[in-house]
Every structure is written in C-alpha cells, then in structure tokens.
Image (tube, rainbow, N blue to C red; front, top):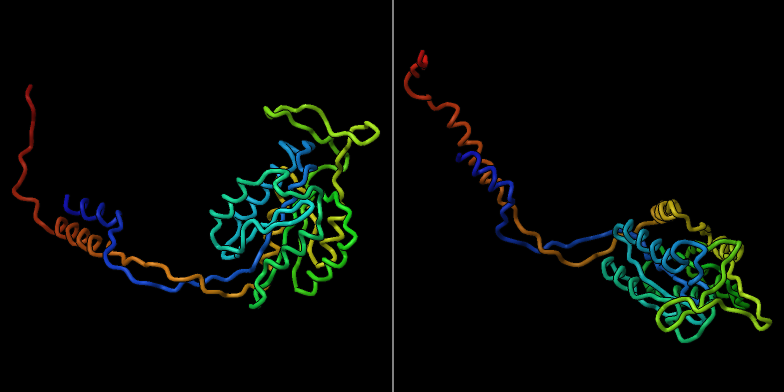
Amino acid sequence: LLTLAACLLGAARPQLGSRKVQVKRSGIDLVLALDTSASMNAADVVPNRLARARREMIDLINELRGDRVGIVIFEGTAFLLCPLTLDYGAARLFLDTIEAGMLPVPGSNLAAAIRTTVKSFPSEGSRSRAVVILSDGEARDPDLADALKAASEAGVIIHTIGVGTPAGEPLPEWNEDGSVAGYKKDRSGEVVLSRLDESTLRDIASATGGNYFPATLAGGEVGAIVRSLEGMDQQEMKAGLRTHYEERFQFFAGLGILALFGFLITPSGGRRKEWRGRF
C-alpha cells in the first residue's frame, strides 16, 4: 500500500520552489497577407474563398515553431491587423474577426499589401523575412513592380497561395438578413464573374524567390510552405523569462522503491495451514 501510494504521488508530479530561466527561440519573421476584397466572397471553393484562406492561415500558424508571425489585410488599401508576435493564440483570435469589406477602400491592391508587409518588419536585426499572400489575384496595380523591387531589396521572400478557380464564380450580394439577394452585375447588366488570376500571383512569387501554390482541400501547400520556411536561416532570439518549477517527484519515487524492497525482503510470517474443505 505504501509503494502504491508513493508511486501515485510521484506520478502527480509535485513541484516545490521555482526559478527564472531565459527562454531562447530560433526562427524567422513571417507576415501573412489576406485579401479581404468583395471577390473573396465567391463560393467557387467551399465554403467561400475567404473562409478557405482563413483555414489555410490557421493551419500554417499551427505548424510554426519559434517564428514570429504577423497579419496584414488588404483591399484597396492595406492594414497591419496583428504585429509580429510569438503569441500564436492571439494571432488566431485576430483571424476570427476578419470579414470581407473590412477596409474603407474597395478593390484589391496587391502593391499596397506588399508595401505594408515590408514596413511591418523591424528595421534592425538580421532575422530572415518571409511573406505569404493569400488572394484570388484579381488586381491591376501599375506600381506592383516597384513594390516587388522594394521587397526584394529588403530581403523579403514572398510566397503566394491562389484561392479560387480559373473558371470563376459570380459575386453574391446580400440582404440585411444575410440571405443572397442576387449577383453583382456590370454596367451592361451582365453578371460579373470573379476568376482566379494565377499568372499575377505566380509573377509576384518568382520576383522575390518565392513559390506559388493553389489552395487545395488536402492542404499540401501548407506543408510545402513550412518546409520552405524551415530552409531559411534561423536566427536565435530571446523570448523573455519563464518561471521554471522544481520537480519533487524523485522523493516519492525513491520512497516507493524502498517500500517495495522492504516488502520483498520481509518474512511472510508462520506456516499457512492447508484448507481441505468439507465433504
């Protein structure tokens, strides 16, 4: 009984006393840029482009180990929603708040997104820098080449994930109760189709040494991006102090061993009488 009790107490991992230890991590700086324009409401991927892109970002954040992550959203302009942080839980909470049409300027300005991501990196330090843009690529930015040149000069590698299909899908318009009222039409009354522009996204990635991936249900592109990030130079950084509690299970484990050894060497008592039962 003493052996059993001591082992149970040891398995509970009692801790007594604490000390402060410096936690160090190695990794890179990563910014995720999400397109929140109206075209991301298209449902050519399930349930729609924006929801799929958010799922890809969550899966990517879940694979990070020691990398700082930030979040940028963009439409006609771009906004730093979450600065670089090691708090992945906080980053995921920011993702839950994202909806299409959050920014005041409509459209899809990829150049603005790239400039904002580059500015979100600290000017000092030598940590590797990477960006992942999730978009349908529907944008016509005359100054995109200048933004890509600035990103390349800053040592930023941009990967892109295309969300949508080349065949396209009409853009829904909503009633106040959230139901679909119809589909967006152009000036001639024709229904507008929003299509995935893979060529633009592929050009953005290749201009900075990154890769383009189409979003898939299996999510293999997330693993490919993670492997690419792991191949970058990992810089060590201080992540602050952490309280380390001293483990005291050793005392109870030793007590259990001694009690078991004492039980084994203790005589079992007098001779037992054999019970023959009744007939």
